[in-house]
Image 1: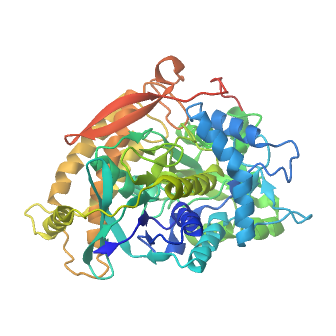
Image 2: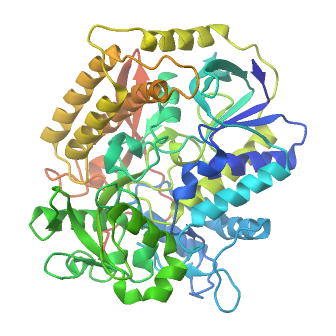
Image 3: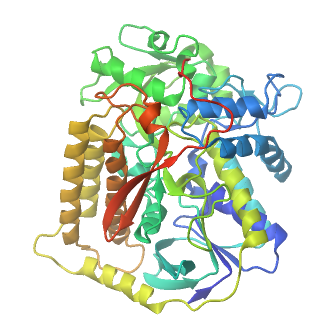
Length: 567
């Protein structure tokens, strides 16, 4: 048994910042951060382009209110406006806190933090560190956690939450370095487990860990998930792997080119061009490919070009050095000399665990922050540069609420929860007559989602996808882990994560079928218009007696009334 006051699940930006903010204020609390990977390998490190804040270092007229308006408009008016205003008003303070911790932001000639343009923004407000902003923020937060003696246990996969009588008791996790299951007793549990876009498998920019584990655990407790149908497809993933090419490449002046040599965004967003919001740019690229104006290689991959050559060698090496390396390593293309082949990639999940503005769930003592949570500040479409801001702002707000309001009375851990997980793992190790392999099913799931619940959607394709996912769930009852070893058993790991991903996939497709409109990233060919009369509301999906139930919740509109989205 592991005992602590606060258990934080996830050592990315949200989890580490939350731990740090609690530790600064309550030195008496025993805080433990549990991470599937070594902290500096968390997915926050993959965020390249920057973090938004209205510092007005480049554009003097920028302000938190203008940042909020851009965010609300970008969300296709589905974001809750009080939460957006809170996030945007705190953004400058958060950036200066990071700066004072030692985060090495890129600088303007006058020494102030550099800011670049990003999609859907009225001003250049994205603070950056070349093209590895998430990486440097993550390193800085990890160093600060070490400085404050915060305990971090890595190579630890949390498998289930333990709750009873409307409060959290702790969790059950697997130490893959030993194969041992542990019960963790905690008065407060904070989920910072990241998004779930890896359910699209090889059509995703996400790391292998982003399979929705935290969201699935919460769903099993019968707690509500919100806006699960909204998956952001980033316009520029590398052709074969889906690895991200930062929006900063377009922010620095990159062009999108079709097979006619045309900068085609002038047809779709004439004022913003390549810096239109991500949903618009992704649909434009897919339209060009569908209508025969894309490229196709000998392996059958279809794509368009992102052209950076005109930026010059100096700027690419200074501001987009990592993008150059990724392009060379994964596509054999040097962007100084050749355009980069790209196509949209499943990148970010706007939906997740339904929380209030402080990260609280309906279960006493349970919080969720970052991409696994839905406050909602991103609505139907997230603006680039707001994801890093989200994890920092709401990581801090959750920490403040925990310090001020959480109760830390000790409760007995429910031993039967540990036994239940032991049975689940033992069943996976059993040899079965019609055994199934997790990696094979994962690939099938990714293909099903991409074709049925991708950039373009329609009822027939989504219903077919749902039927196929249900069949995959049945086949998953025959999952068999052939590797019987205890230490770093990756086959066991992915079998457990597949079971979570199949639950998540259903929670995505059910509200997607019922939202009969197009809004933000959810674009339906059979309902191409936004329908504010019937669908200006959040979808809420809750598991009851093993089945998902769908309901709806009003969007909080305090200042900006919905209007047509033009760029």
